[in-house]
Length: 406
Picture 1 (cartoon, rainbow, N blue to C red):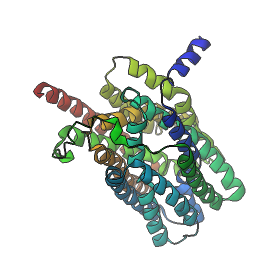
Picture 2 (tube, rainbow, N blue to C red):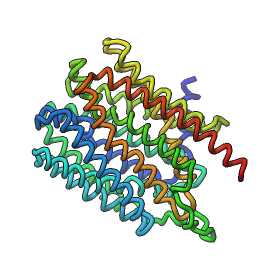
Picture 3 (cartoon, rainbow, N blue to C red):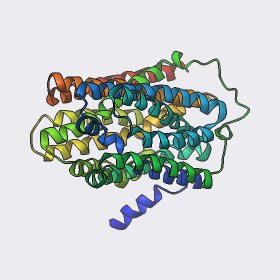
């Protein structure tokens, strides 16, 4: 049984290109250093003494920078290619993260966070398009999953190491490590990864379909609504959840880091074989996304069932399985929906929908918590998860009608 499991795990990695493996390593190095984000709300409230409303406003600037950065990343990727966008984005982001520790005023930090995320999130559409250049079409979902695996392996180390760094070097150490790992990751990319154009991955004789507007693609617009709501509830994991762990359950930074590491470790162990098995099956991928959103909703409703500390682990497991089932297939849907020549724009809209959630998610959560309670916030987030489920059902019906017409 163990041999069979190990063999299945190994088979799920077979056939991926060398470049995709390098991208995964670079992503891991970068993500392992992204320790600031899980502790950002704690840093702002405890170290800089900002109110929850002010933290929510800073997260709005975070989201605005992310939205504009994602849009700009898509435009630049289509214009100059993914490689220079990835390189300059991460290199400059590294220096910006190091500089954040020296900004201590509310307005200054808001603007600094805006410009940091503007530069940082030009990277996101670029890396998605890079997979179209470096992986075969039949391996794209698994390539995406490997990148997510690297992200989550880094994330499993990041919060734990971040908690230790706070305990020893305090918060400035996080900004230094985060910035340096961004710079190291992208310098490694420059050394090991040869520049390749994503255009080589599609039929050059095929027209670019520049007359097709994303805003006339009804199915994709519904899909973007799903992504927005998915991001809206998921981002609570990094904004309001650490505050809840500390204020309602009395966990310290190291314990919070360990709890959040469950997410990364489960994904590292289970996601790749799970996605490989699903890809080989005849399961409807859109239905899988729908059920993943049910798990998202349940993870928030579960928090209100009991004050028992074990409920935190149950909630984390539920949202992690939802994440494993949702993100690889939503990424893949966005890539496959894009007409030739519009990959950057479609993937930019995908990342922008998620970034838009940054604008509203933290601010909404912080305001609900400050005016009402954590419990009220969990009910709201769980309900939004159910709304996303209903949108997915609408999307499936729209796609069925679309296929009948075509």
